Image (tube, rainbow, N blue to C red; front, side, top):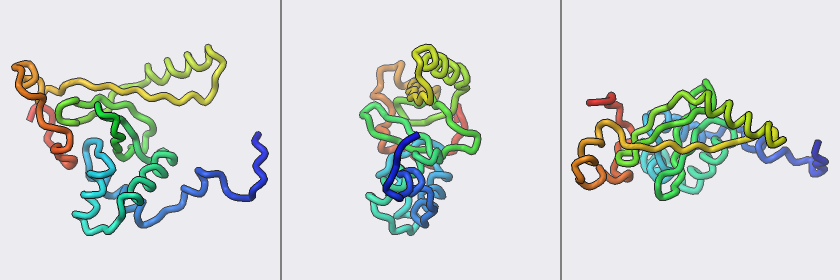
Length: 166
């Protein structure tokens, strides 16, 4: 439909190539159970012996997001957090406001609603962002007792694999 005349590939196509940095970012993200910031990911890459600059991490994450390879949410402060997207496509997550733990939620109703609202308004190719946050079962007791709100997000363990209720 567009009248591109430059001969350059569309922006998304230029991002499709695989680089060692993007591969390293995906490999480290695969080991993270919860969402992580670009800075946390950069530190994890450095700890694994990958010398990747922070700007390159941001660029790789942006490209991976455009390619549908990562999911992105925002924390309470508005910082973008990233998680490797599973092969079964777009997901929505419920995130703990205290510890940052996340879990995917059934989202068919959200997808249907977004399609219906867009169609009713005469729109197509509708994209949406849904942010679901709460306090997980592990953090709820301290929150109910008026204790400080858990541990700060920057201290969470991105490799945590402890099951719910542990």
